[in-house]
Amino acid sequence: MESMLREMDGLEVRRREISVLIEDVAVYWGESVGDFTNPEFEEFKGLRSELEEFSSSLYHGVVQIHNLGGYLKSHRRGLVDFYSVRDGRTVFPCWRRRTRCSAITS
Image 1 (cartoon, rainbow, N blue to C red):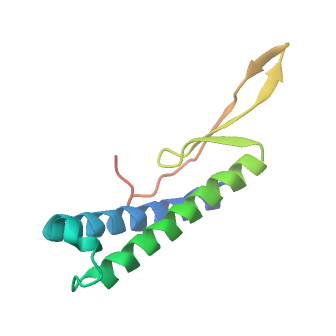
Image 2 (image 1 turned 45 degrees about the vertical axis):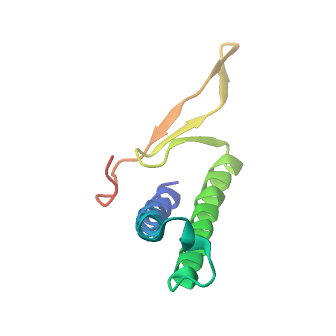
């Protein structure tokens, strides 16, 4: 579980960086950023594709945790709930990582 969350930390850092780059290009060029004649169109298109890849990889991490029986509450805080029944009641015991990636900040 710890290694999955650590991997997700790295993916999230890069996803945020790409989002900022996309926003910067979009703010600079406005609506014309999507025009194929724009000098930064290919870079913008590449960044959007890269963002989709990182978002997909993050989603894959969530699915992996779910397949282990966990429900990701917060990968940034390292919180995963597990469905369980105790004394006839539904409970969600929580797993929390011991350390946190210093590169992730709220």
